[in-house]
Length: 471
Ligand SMILES: Nc1ncnc2c1ncn2[C@@H]1O[C@H](COP(=O)(O)OP(=O)(O)OP(=O)(O)O)[C@@H](O)[C@H]1O
Image (cartoon, rainbow, N blue to C red; front, side):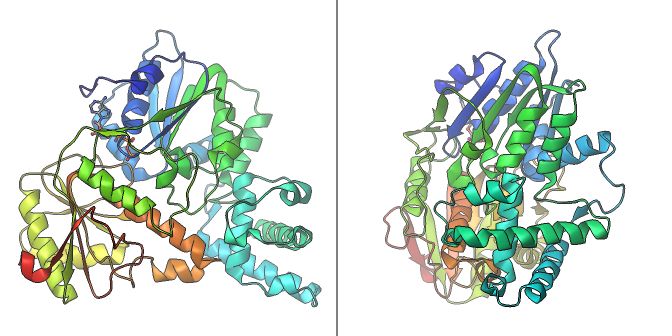
């Protein structure tokens, strides 16, 4: 499949027996997705073997994987976690046909109602004066861990998070809000939210002694799966089958900061992929500088690249006097590189994509936006537009990252709704890392105004230009 020969540790992982738990941690571009796909095909082709589920986080990556694997095998299913979860609960008659899962906004609403109810009941308790975001984050943590009761929640250690300094005796109040929230949502017939779906899948699987659909389950981008999501997938594997986890903690961008190590995966050895097959050494030097920022949270599971295969120019950062000029330059350059290579403009949010799309179209450029619905994204020689989040797992010859200003990165809305600024900065800087590591060749970054504090300013890992140098 797609003409790649696994090398070194990749080859060793390919040769592992088709049973038990396997954990692969790898740096960006080290072939995690590639080996996940190759291994999935290999397992699906075992004569008389069972079905294989390859599961990942975002929809764009699912499409990308389906596109590059061009598999017709009915024994291999590639989908995102939520599709698996909904499908499974549905097969057990546990998924309401309509409105089964609360949206994040609805979840916030019911949590707020729960806080209000408890505030009225316990008027002197100061915990209830904390902002709603604090409760949302804490309840989401409870859900992602799948604590069944207060005792389990109270016992757990919260490490490395600013919000971890909640006194243990106060956790009962947070748990009370959680229980009230559950009561309120049940009263309106809503069974799940996106963060506790996995908990119900896990419980359902534990009660389900029917035959398992999948003999082998492989997770790609596993760093963004909650412990409960992983537990449920492990539980979904048929007896005698295998569970393989691929992940990169440096690319954990969905804000959970929880570790796969809390999910009970039992691998006797951790495989570390440390050869970067995608980014040239010039880009790896730049992304390493990102990880040396004061905002970057170190994690012992992070794997650094020890070798690179690709070659390319040094990344550039261009400063513009005005945003219009910045946009005009990015559009012009992206159209130029898009004629001969796959090129992407990566934005912090959809609104920024919307500012680029009409300008590109006006210039006759048939740019494609990549989002969860984009079918079969491929490395076509053209211009793509995407968000930092949806770029995850993908790769392009040339990457443009515009608007790297203090008012865009970190995203002000994310910072203001986060429990602590420190946590928000630690999450947002990973977005920059993810975007920069998408490039196989060129990396062009721009800003007008004040540069984002998340950008590694004092670094010789990129070339700085004023707009006069480039226009
Ligand atoms: N053994 C190999 N030989 C040649 N090319 C390889 C090999 N392994 C991976 N590649 C190429 O390296 C690039 C990165 O691979 P892949 O997308 O699988 O990495 P990844 O670890 O999933 O990256 P990320 O986590 O950054 O998304 C791809 O273009 C892939 O084809």
